[in-house]
View 1 (tube, one colour):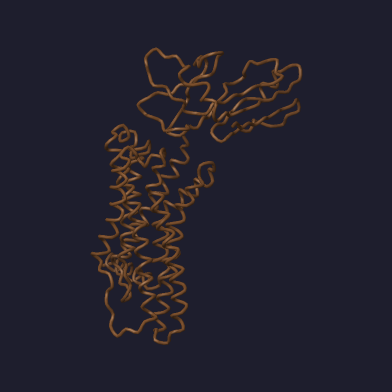
View 2: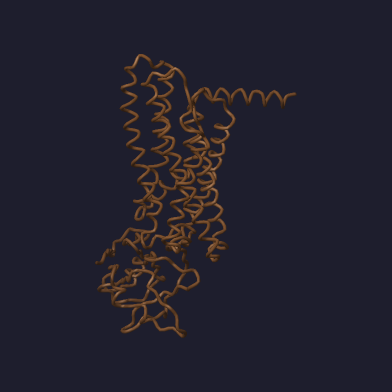
Length: 408
């Protein structure tokens, strides 16, 4: 299987620069305008750029001769660029190729830029300019990630303060929401610190593997707590349609905490037992090879599916409860608001991860995934803080008291 692009410029070209030619795993920047100007016969030039996805099986890395006995691995697809019908082949500027890694890069090794010469790979005239774990570094994405995660952490903290300090109506159980914030706050904070000090952490394989295991646990526990909140809502809505003379707490906070964290811990322990080498990728996350990423995505998909089923059941039960005259109007209204907010939270927290399945070949989707995932704390604070009149009134009273203390 191969991919390719062809681009031509003529003597009357008005472009200032040639657009980058791209395939799925590679791209090329070439000064075709300068080559055309030096092509005195036609004043035109063309480039044919091809990417061969399986050519490395024939032109194997073993054909690259090195001074010592090293393990050689092809890190990219084989590409070719030709200039048809060009008499003057002297390049006006160096040609820059960007090659995406097709497998995980071992940082203890070294990268070489090579090209095929009759019967072997050689490096003459070809050199590596810049590299990272995937391909050429994108500093814009790194800065965007840093800013977005920091903003998200601030709002996670505000959401936790809201749940912990504000007075809530009787019957409102915030234990699941508090633990969602705690899990995700710690996960995003650990991820941010790891990426900032990745060059120091990554060579320490044990430390990197432990961090990836902690991230696995924290992100999974966030999803488990989201499922627990859906279960609590279902129990709450179910009780509206039943006649009860006294209220009682169905599930204690202690029992919920055991469920919320033990389930995620069991998944991580089983993953460690089955595939211990699956932890500690180049970003100190789960390794993508051998489908180990499904130790995270599998439970997430199951929880999202169960949550969707629960919300459908909640909608059906709530609709029938509306016809029950025994349900108080204020209680019904409060429950409907709780269900709406939990559903919004489910969409924001859960569905943003589904977007991660489709980000491989799209920079726009990658940026969207980064923003949605990093701003989970912002959405939680908006849903349960800013959009809650009682909470906002308590915040106003707090700031008024703060201003009065400063004045005195």
